[in-house]
Length: 162
Length: 136
Image (cartoon, rainbow over all chains, first blue to last red; front, side):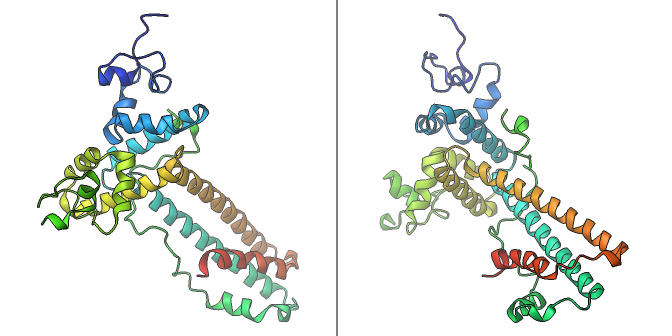
């Protein structure tokens, strides 16, 4: 029981690692870099407060996302994760635009191939909308300059949840 | 200029010096902005981060710190990582849909006799993104 090594947080903070140390389950002593980077960006006391406000079963995920954000911020001190968000939003917008164009192309092909389609049943407003849509007016949620420096696929859980 | 304290110095209840690192980015008319950032990062961490960035980029940095802090307050477990995750899902879904649609175009172009007579249903599908995303 006694004599277990202090967690990475308590080692860095140079304090005794209590049995109920809030950091110990998430910052093992064999990975000092993990706590170091979170401490650098958020600060130990802020991380502690954030974890204390969460139910225990959510703390591991919270730590992983904090580590992810801290890494992003260290890699890109100006934009952090927001660079990735901006980049991904642009990618999604472009793909949606390409999809709309492709779907319009299908419709045109069908109209050419089946001249007897009941086109007159189309709502006139819908037809005008299709013909007048300006593909350049894609609203952007963020106006930050995009940065792809911090792109990691969060869906690959192995890489995100270190 | 005692009456001209920035939001940070007001929050921290201190004098706002003429070279205050926060004053340009945390004006007194938006106290919530600094409160958010302070809650997640702490004043000294924000000051250190801003000091390490060239002055022309500090405004953007303050903005992104505020954005991330707001995301974290709204979603204490995932913060803005939740947003990134959702965007990846949207990206994958859009890629898959595009690939499927382009394959349909290839089929239609190769086999003009087999064009399905479903103009109206295709039209509604076509209009869905316009209605939800492009119409303001």
